[in-house]
Length: 137
Image 1 (cartoon, one colour):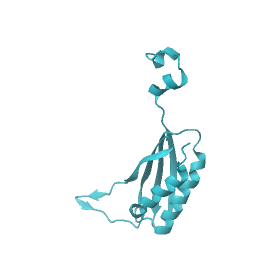
Image 2 (cartoon, helix red, strand yellow):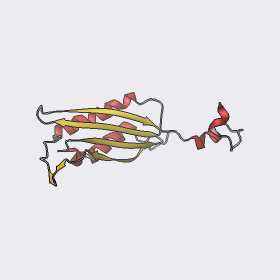
Image 3 (cartoon, one colour):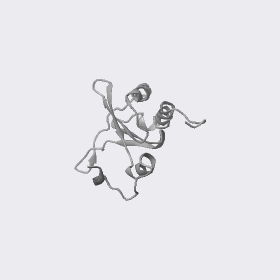
Image 4 (cartoon, one colour):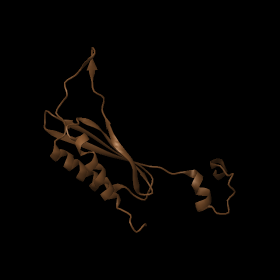
């Protein structure tokens, strides 16, 4: 590990603090974080579509409050304990607000990514570079 490396939990905390203004008053969507070598690369929010009927934009529901965003950030950090043994991938945090109940919900999806092109040199130093996945059946 690098001497100046920052833990993934601190990076996720930073991401949510950067997105705080965008998440406040958001009604539903997905926070996505792309990870490479245990470091956050890209991050952002996919907002759920705004409903339009007959060319008119519908009423905008009440979204997340500042305290709900803070709780969401803590949930995202706490959920990292379920991420096991991978260094590349994406984390998706889906969220929605239920304005009639003044509550919110979230779910976490982890996706690990692996690159086969780097495995020949890393795990099979004497392997020929032209092996394909078929050669391992």
